[in-house]
Length: 264
Image 1 (cartoon, rainbow, N blue to C red):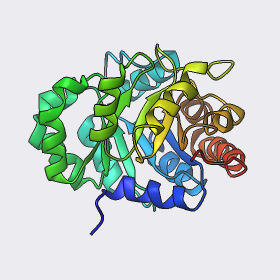
Image 2: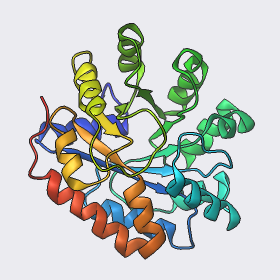
Image 3: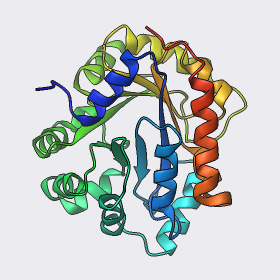
């Protein structure tokens, strides 16, 4: 029996093949065809797909993902409707959700974790739940078979970083730059520095997210990290061009990363 859950096992397997890991982020409930966008991302070479559950006060998100969330909410998207869509997806790669803690708290830990598991979700990210307060959620999620992906920031002190790397499941999410999500002209130096710090502490996959805007930046990130999470660029494509555009964008990142050397 594997020591890891579905997401981490898959990422470890792909990494062992020399593959740079790619996890695109999409906003759940954004348009009637949002599930087709998830399937397009998976078909274009995603190693997992992160699905955001829209929230009215998305403190970590920049203007593009905020707009996407507002559109989804205005269209009637709810956690239940999105998870119903997830349960019907036909994809080979694992799926993760990103939701703010208010959504988790309102449902209750056990109920929310059970809903994720029932929908086939492999892992969850709760970005505004501090690590020191996350133990109860992590334990409940694990009992339901859901991996909790923890975030590490450039300002995370060494002692806390070691604990985050130890207790994260699926992968360690290295936040490349302080601030909200959004496109940037260049990859922040803090991104690769943080990835190197994490890699020195764990064998778990380390992915850089926040501030990875172009295929070239993704390749640069993989000089130290095992892979990347790409959000704003993918969501922009989703809003402007729908599932086909999502597939094209994810495919461009996949093609670039296939020529990259995975950090060891």
